[in-house]
Length: 222
Figure 1 (tube, rainbow, N blue to C red):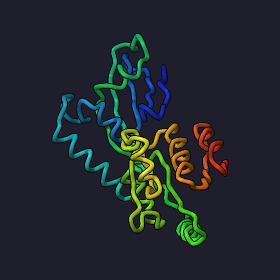
Figure 2 (figure 1 turned 180 degrees about the horizontal axis):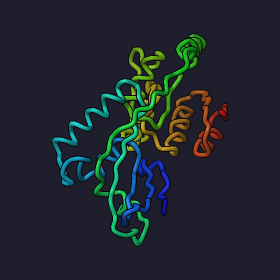
Figure 3 (figure 1 turned 180 degrees about the vertical axis):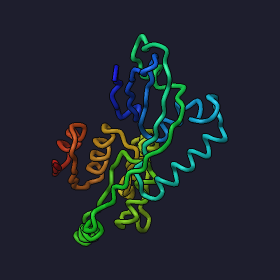
């Protein structure tokens, strides 16, 4: 390994660059399926040219895996004669050759559905906030009874486009947030509090700290 461009939640991918034994270099990029496909110029084993029909077919395969409740990572590569002068993510993570998907099964624990039901019986409305693909989030939410009735699912992109007044009108009915950026968790907590809700929030990463601090009850996990 010669270099690395670390993961961040905005790009939703990361890259490592390696020296090839016969000379030159190869970079491998992995990340969210939509992030990798947006940076793809061709498919491994096919022409290194944009193939819209093929990429659409590949996208549907990834969506099918997500719909089954899998967390889906996509992989791409790119060959280099020499190391890029600047390890700029926009330049390095482009014109990728798509390699494939990896699906990770991360099922909810058996006791989660009962815990959700217990919360509701106590007047608590559970809400899922995740960085996962919306199809994955929906599949898991249905398994634990979180999307029953009129509960909504929205993505971080949709949340970003909502005005504060529109969000406040919907926030009490949203049960699942998918592909959410860390800073949006704070907005969710504050919106619920603005509606008079008493908010408990769980989190296990440094990015959760602002939302944990703002919540009425902050529960640090792990």
